[in-house]
Image (cartoon, rainbow, N blue to C red):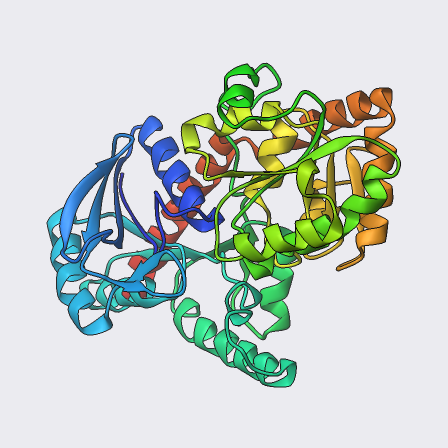
Length: 394
């Protein structure tokens, strides 16, 4: 099958949607399919490229000044995208979002009568925090964003989302179609408890003590400040190091907050870690933490679980589908640094509990094997093709 994946963010961008698209493309190639990815160029011109054996067509784009991303302008995008689609001649188009390239692909698919499905990775809260307006205005903006999403995704033959919780959200914003949960998937061969942390410990200057780790963008929506505010209470009970893996615009503010709280020496800003080093950086952790309430699944949480780690995550959206209280970690209320601290203390002061919870993480994560996710998408690709053929006949 010739499969075209389309996303407005893609490798080497550091975000869940970009990683998910790239890893799905790799897995589909392993299944014997011919795959092409359409995504914004990292430079000013359109060109073909290849990332880890996966070919891509990079569309002319311009930078977004406030974050390290680029976007393609609709007028220029359609001409380039149409040419790439006609050249590749896919059996199915799979969009990963409703933004410029996604909606452009939908229009072209309709014009050329090519089957098209989509997966939603969108939550307005991941973007609206960049807009400096009162909360009531931000809420109205988010409602308009959902209407815009609906206008694009309602045209698709099949719609998927990473979790049942994500599917329920779409039902709550009056999305008119059935939404099928398909896990983003995790490569259980790459992320496993046998990976060695020794090389990354040395490279990133990780101390020889218990490590609480987050892996995410250092941006406001990730709420890493909540973890930092928990550190004084945690350190009053156990000597740990909080290691932040990732980069973002909030780094300077987080450094200042760590200084203000008097915990700077127990905080490591590891910065960006290349994808090939991620399996080993998780191996260095003793517990994973996540405070962001906007996760439709959370690749980072799954990667930590696949490495055999307990997790302390916010009780929001899809995270309770991964972390089961008292089994493989704990949930804490949104923005509640005290509850976060107490959960971390329970895990970090009990070696047997860490071991037991890590083993349960490994058990839970098995159902998220990326090979299984790719198989589900293959089924939905065939369904999308059948629906398009039937619609054409009728």
